Amino acid sequence: MSVRKLIKTVAAMLAALMVFMMSSGFKSEVRADGNPDSVRQFVERLYRETLGREADEDGAADWTNRLLSGGSTGADVAFGFIFSDECRALTVENSDYVQVLYRAMLGREADEAGLNSWVSFLNAGHPRSNVFAGFVNSPEFTGLCTEYGIVRGNRRYVNPDLPMIALTFDDGPSGRTSELIDCLQSRGAAATFFVVGMNAERYTDTLARMRRAGCEIGNHTYDHTYLTRLSVTDIQGELGTVNDIVRAATGTGTTVLRPPGGYHNETVDAVAGMPLIMWSIDTRDWQTRSTQATIDHVLGNVHDGDIILMHDIYSTTIDAALYLIPELQRRGYQLVTVSELAEYRGGAQDGVAYYRFRP
Ligand code: ZN
Image (cartoon, rainbow, N blue to C red):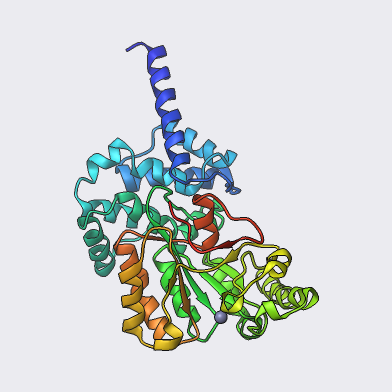
């Protein structure tokens, strides 16, 4: 092959890779801001951990430049290595693949429980990219990138072609909400919390943790008043107070509204200033107060694009959700925020009520 032909082939392959990476949900919003040496070290360690060899000069320089220019995120580069033919050839067995993810993306050896859980997930037929997403969205990967001066930001990896649902929790936060956040974060998952202001102001640390974990914070009024009974000024007051509490705790306000009871009218729609998010699966967890009934209701009804209603003020619901989060993932569902679900499924407009976002 002539040199010119070789260059052309490589350029075509890179272009194809970029198109694939864009279509698989990667965004290029995040920029490396570290010094070139530490970013280069990030690339060199990926060569060692995924390919088992030292970097070649051209390849290392190319990946380093992409990170420094902001054209690629740490996740993009890790994807490029892990899904390269060279790495695939070294990770034919699922257990080898998972072990490479632990070393390359978390910087440590796999623990036995984690290894077994991901390998059985793969053996059940789930795609490797789902497991990759779990690692990319973990706080440990963010931490590893940060060590090398690569700011990954809070943009999560979502594969638009695979099933996704939104878990939503109303009326909190409560003392056990942080357990949900821990579980979501450790699995690379996210949820949406429709908080009421009177609880939100008691748990401002929990609000901050939600935001850091990539979860979404929605508005559920200050004191759970039915908005259809209020004047325009009073609706604005209810929503504005919650926004102020959330903004003070996290830097930004609420992004979606769930009116208490689901009650809304033309006035509420006009004043909302954000999409109204209803639900397609009502677990009735507040009524049954049964962990098993909540689990059964979700698993018996869930479909791609569902919005699931639960309440994180009940201990029975927290226990149900701690079981459901890994179980829904095992069944192939990506757990995303309401706004992520909307983004990949046609979008959402202010003042319009949505019940689900089907593919
Ligand atoms: Zn409520």
